[in-house]
Length: 177
Image 1 (cartoon, rainbow, N blue to C red):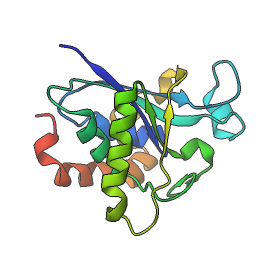
Image 2 (image 1 turned 180 degrees about the vertical axis):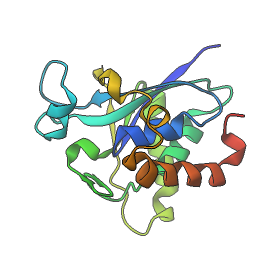
Image 3 (image 1 turned 30 degrees about the vertical axis):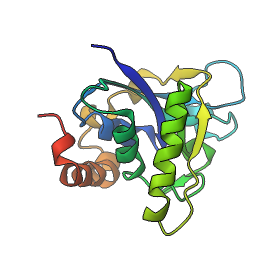
């Protein structure tokens, strides 16, 4: 099996991580930081300050024979609001921007195709940026597998669970058994 990697961000990485973990063909999801201008590995606290320029992202390892990159992006793009600049719900700042970070020119072309395809789906303009991934920094251990490890946490119940429920209803045929 040959896995591909997608790097995406759409607000808090805990939300995107929880959604991607549900999908058939996804083998691994790692929360982290990318797209910043400050050198060196940033900490969660530094990224949350908004001063490093990094976005909270997830790196998704998936089997393209079971889940295409295009389908993964379509699910990602319809699972968050890609029309709000630097914001998802109560999370505000550049670290919460909607971003697709490509690993190849083929991924870049697919991302641009998905954004064009979805443009008429939203009443407001899509502000998701498409950028080349330069460096990915894995987030601290306490940020990995957050939803599964803390299902009773307030944020999980109030924010992540409704997104996961919506995903389960909308993409039943794409979920792990």
